[in-house]
Length: 58
Length: 456
Image (cartoon, rainbow over all chains, first blue to last red; front, side, top):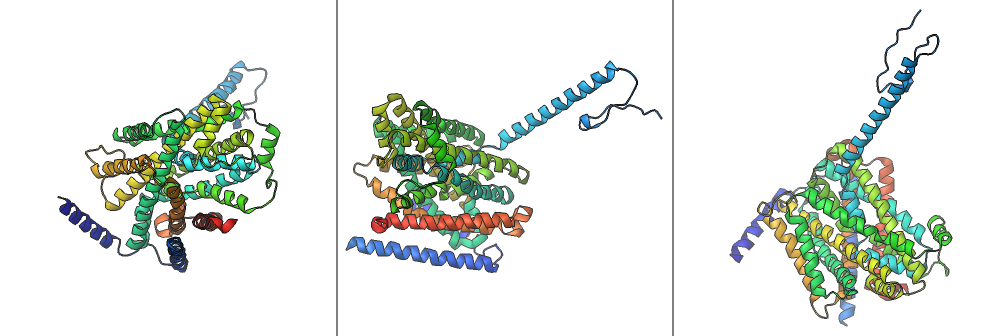
């Protein structure tokens, strides 16, 4: 039963990924710059979190 | 040439000149007063219609804004008042328009696209950003729910109520509100708790605060004695951080969709949000007035301890504050749990409306109750790292808030979907400024939570 639940969930997730595979928003330069900035920002944050985690372990 | 008299229509009313005739004419005077009466009646009926229409539309904006003053928010305001007195009330007032401008965008986006924010991100930016936002939201909301339960248990512990009883009471109330199968009923019940959130206003009047100083704090932008210190900066960041939370964006947009608001309802939705923003600021200001008057210069680390201190000064006042804190936590919890449930289910495409009965949307309700029980259970675990969880909420919020805000602005500028409701130039200038400020400040706030010594 649990296995079936996970199988169903996985197929639903695959369906969602297929449904939203292509972004529907028009990729204007403003959108591209905003998404790039967001990626860099998140990489920066993850970097800080990892650094903090390592310094805490030490 | 004699002019023929025709009775003016109701809309023409007083603008139609009366005919000029010899002598006095009681009939025409009667006509004029009848016109005035009919015009007044017409206006009265029109006003009633507008109010009735507004009451139908009102709800998501007021609820989300008042729920913004959740347990964490009340803690921040009481701590600010105790630390800096009335000197920062003007700053809190400025945060009202900030919250309004951000939340107003969700009304337009929801009413036009008929999609919740999670679904809108999936649709607009693809599955990568969609999953990132959804998972971040689910984690953050669950952690925030724990802080709401911490607030509720702290509030009722003042009356000697055991934690487990508080958790069960809150979970039962939350369950009862949703299982009756009507969005309208849930919303009106939530509005009752919103009214209860105003308890801080009579509480502040009970202590007779120094009116002149309070007015100065409200109207004159000023820094507290000691000037701009790191501690003041931390408090300013905390107050901005509590003004806009990621769950608010997701909640209001989904609520607008669940309520089936249309494009024609957008103005009403904006008024609803504006009224909510007004009450948020009022409650925040009165919290500051309370602690600024009774606990000046003291360090407050949680609103529960502030209520306990008030209990020592005046039992009635302490009771008011404890009720207010429980209500704040409860309002936050009902909105946050719904925000997650709505987001999760709208992406998975399952029935997810409060208008669905439990049988019609079992997964929606199962997820809702699972979230409540999981958060409530953590609070009951002995020696659970509750302080660490509170800090973690601030850090996780920093990862989601900028993304949610950036997506919001980009979606509001998409002419293909938004049409005439897309952001105007003025709205873009205002919103981009606000979002940049919020992103910068919340990032600094998150970093200061990770590295507490950075501001010392």
